[in-house]
Length: 314
Length: 280
Image (tube, rainbow over all chains, first blue to last red):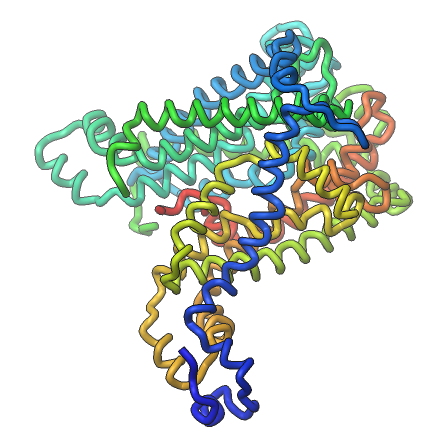
């Protein structure tokens, strides 16, 4: 679509001499490609190429100036106790965060949304504050609060119940607990907001008609609230699985580096970081990355299938 | 939110108390670190972080030592520069792309939108090694640009802008075209002002993400004078606890600007941070 020069000249934007080159600016066929160009460039350079390159590298041994094709060797080498430990830690962490960070915020959101609740906006704002703080600062705070000293906050707290002081970060179970506490602290307000948004989308009339039919609070919760919260719950579940399996920085900060006694804080991404960046084995690290990708995709796929998300189109 | 008055019944009191306790628990670590920042670092090393108040030993000495540290305020400056550059560029690019996807019908539209979703689904961690290699070959290692350039065209804001523009009226676009407005002109002069609320919440999302970003800058930034605040602070964390003064006071100074912004722009924080949940 080419506009005549005189038309544009007399227009509001006019004044400028409209040459043939300027007519490109009026083309509705070309315009969308100009708008999406930043994405196309960034996608090719910073996404498609790296994905392609990591897949290739995972079949190679990569050292500076020397690359050899090793077939499936990197993947075979994954069959080792340290990687198993990382997978186990990441899986336990993910499952525990799901067990806490889905039901608790859901129930809290229902409470916060109830007619009986006072100062809703205030509490909504306060529960959100932890999400603003960087994991680095959180790691520092929690590392010191869960310090081994008798006078560190958490040891003081359990001391109230007559318990002996604990070296929280030295054993697998208590350090997992600390990681879970950090995750809960950080995400409870965010998940609560997601569920709250979901609750506020449920039409009030549904509850009113249920009340007319004499439905109890429990029946209303299980028959109206829960089913209508399904889409947002699936969203929260999906991001939590991804977040859980890609956890790294929390552990990195808690242990002041990517090293913990007996690798009790080692996660899959921690292993990727160690092998790929600390030891410089880019090929092996890539194999760890691809395995992580396949693992999360498989879990997401199973979960979406389980919830019947593929049955209906949006 | 409805503002109808609720009566104080037993259940409303117990709900109120429950949330009061929860809020206290969530604010406790913040309180603890602010308190800790006023204590001598030797105390912190010896006793750990707790809520004991001992006015005899408390002072602002840790904050003063921040000014003596050769790098702390360099890190602060780097963080501000990266956050501003990243936020401005990322809003410009992602609003363009989101707008393009929402307004025009063109052949590759669905393909590109699907690719945006794919990028959103794949965690950074999986491509961090090849990206690291790419940064080396582009000579972007240990530069401020390298710390954010790969993520400047961000999928979540694109998605958000696309949804937002889809909901805007578009009848006057043709009127603007008849008046001789260029396609870019329509975007810059007519649509951008209408997208202002979306810009606010995405600005918060991107700025907060950038301010707190850790993993990627950790990989790219190496020399002390190039580090951002989170990376710099993390280098001060050692098992020996000899830097606790900088570490604790520095952490408090790193969160204060965010908390101040949050008080004034709360609505946009909440919209921005939950943007992923908007209906597709």
